[in-house]
Image (tube, rainbow, N blue to C red):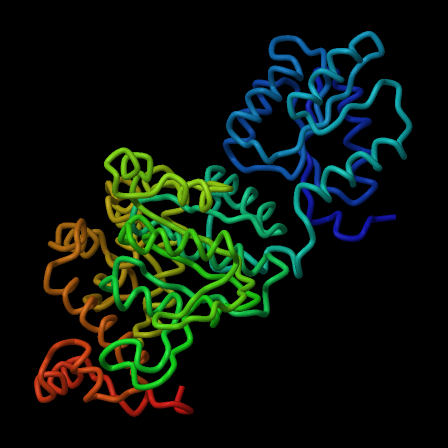
Length: 452
């Protein structure tokens, strides 16, 4: 009888005895699990390079690398991957010692099938807590990279708790996508996920966005404004580019996290909040702390669990997968019958340096789709897109336009679409402010109460 959900779970078994390896495989397959086999620790590590299982079961005594050495290698590279060790009676003390170092469990030979299955179910339950349909939580993240799978395995585990998470990685690696995946796998799914780029606003507006303000708190505060902590009540607050937050505001954020309360700007009463905080940065916060630009106490409050996203150049096996996904979506948007990339084009994509990571790959594919006149993206198109300026670093004019739009959007939200008050807050005359709104096609009426 197949166990519920077993078919979705993959177990790697490692033993240098072919008969025992086969017997163990048959038992697991009969229970509905997918099984991969390795005849040595070295072979097992090589298989991990092609994809991570949900569980490893390994014999203790093997020629070459033994079970403990295999575990140590696995723990170093994939600390959340559970390992069960099978041991002869004389090696039980070694197995007990191994459990203190992180081995999930051990079984002394000979063991009953029911004992094996009970231990397997226990390990798999801890490795991937149930949270809705399998893989739905991470549906926006496309990967076949073991490095990414390891990060996602850790993300799934931490999602079950309310621990603060700090996501680190270069720009364009997908930090917000990972934050959304953690939220989707958590018990807070169904409640709001609210995101804020801490580097996109000046300090006064950033404080108001986070904590809210009362009417009359400053020029332009014509009515009470609820901050993002309150907007995310019961859910998740994602603070992107936390390393760009001004020091004075870091103090107030730390107090809010410690006390689970926020005080709106200009207010005298604090408001209780129940929010899980996920933060992200491309900066090395240790260096920022050393340079006195980031508070060490806030760092430890945010960095309960640290997840680091690999650069695209470190997960090149994902490039064809991501390129095909972007191509299908962009071809549909542009109304072009493009079936795929020419082999030479794929080779160029695979060998490009990608300093801008996944965001740059999307940008290159979009340029190719926009310029394509055939049914395949050619190597010439890809080469042209890769050589175009602006891929490695965003052009100043583009960055300024993006900042202006985000700034105007925030200020209109704070003033509920009141242009006169928004212009005063921005210290611009009214006609100039209207020109800015027109340039970015922003309608103040959209921000008035009841229009959102």
